[in-house]
Length: 415
Image (cartoon, rainbow, N blue to C red; front, side, top):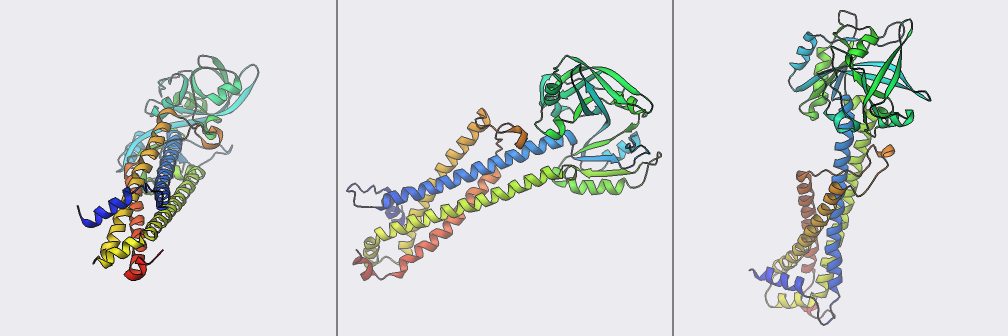
């Protein structure tokens, strides 16, 4: 054990049994300041990452990563269908980075009971559609195996719509659709009820089979409202969107022009809100690091003032300014180290409790989710710890240089 470390440890362990020392409370405050700062930074980081993961997964669950849709209307201002034949599907799937391609078809309609009605967008999907997200949002019933070859006469509605209409899974309900010359009616069975807490989807969408929607629109088997495309790496979604835009220039045999849009463009307001959260957590990290640096510096200065006679004695005995600085640097490292350990332990424990037991609730109509979400990213956690250590090191080195300002004779006579 080095001489500097031995002295630093004795200073840190000194509990002032005679009650004359006043530095111990300051040291504890400094240590707990570092701990609280680290705890707040970890919780803020975990919550923001959780929000981004949960909200973005819901947006992408309903709209995928990229959408290829028609930009052409007919004389009645209805969107014309996209020609989604095997040639187009194969060409899109062949683009490097594309993970999955699925078709969908939309039709506006009305669900009606004896007492109420609700206008909705009927989204038709087939056997190629990835329904994992929809299954994860089910709160009643089940997700049918929808087909593009036959009608299931089943629908999946949101809990909001089910509550407004007073129906539940297993009930049968009439649906009405405007045709070219007359109103069309279907009697459908509610197979399941979902809830995403995203009002844009819960209040507006009904899920059914694409076969029924195509028939209601008088479309052919290879015509759809568009394609939903998922990618392997979401960080490259904008790049792949631009590639598909170049690829899809022109019109098909029906004179329809395609448009390709990323989910960041389609749900721009949601991703803008998530970007604001990034700015907020950055400000919290900066403020907490400044608080931690201030508490470490103040604690170190109080200790140096209290031990100033000891510093003078060490200098008289031959200790250089470098040796004395190293003693107090080691002391500060002990203080910061214990603070970081305590802050990490408490912060991670609170995050784990929230993740497992969902203790803190939220208003889902405002935040899109009903509990505070938690997501652990160990790389980010490590980076926050390393950055805190670097900031503390700079503060310690700067504060410890104050030791060299006084002469040994002056420090020994200091009262």
